[in-house]
Amino acid sequence: MLVKPDGVKRGLVGEIISRFEKVGFKIVAMKMVWVDRHQVAQHYKDEKEYLTSVGQRTLDDYQKFGFDPGETLGTSDAYEIGGMVRKWNMDALTSGPLLAMVLEGVNAVEIVRKMVGPTNVTMAPAGTIRGDYSIDTPVLATLKKRPIKTIVHASGNVEEAEFEMKLWFKESEMFDYKRVGEEE
Image (cartoon, rainbow, N blue to C red; front, side, top):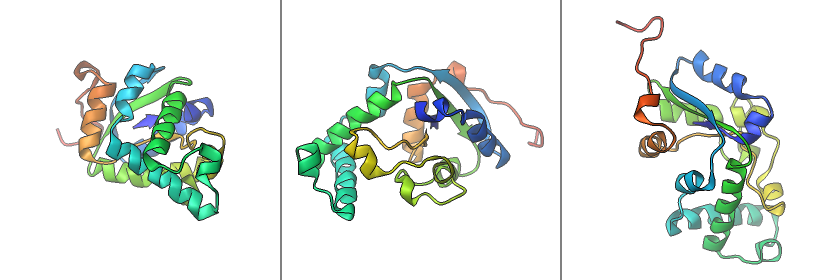
């Protein structure tokens, strides 16, 4: 889980941490970092299948709102657009400090994803982090040639979470401890 630079710059770190602690998640690793492009390039995959799916979501948003991606982006190719979005994401994640953390708990990945809300923040319900704090739209972001200001990143599945934990933390930076109320 990351609080992205847009969330840090808006002073939302404490609120976000508080939400996860209140539902019972245990923070087993946490640090503020200002990452370089090399680390971010590992976070945002440079793989054709991934980039094509990202580009297709952008194309779907354009179609939904009646915009011509060829006119705005110079292409209608999902793979090329995915590459643009990856670059924008890398620019955004390196634009300031971010907070990286590992949360532990029952069904952590699934529940954290539910708590943060959809990456298309226009569809994020009230009560989710994105629904409560992001006022951006996919189309506005694309027209401005930047990623959607989603405030946070949450791993999409357990495999992704395991990869990202190793990317963001050394084993010595992760802690196993008991919270009050946990069985000894």
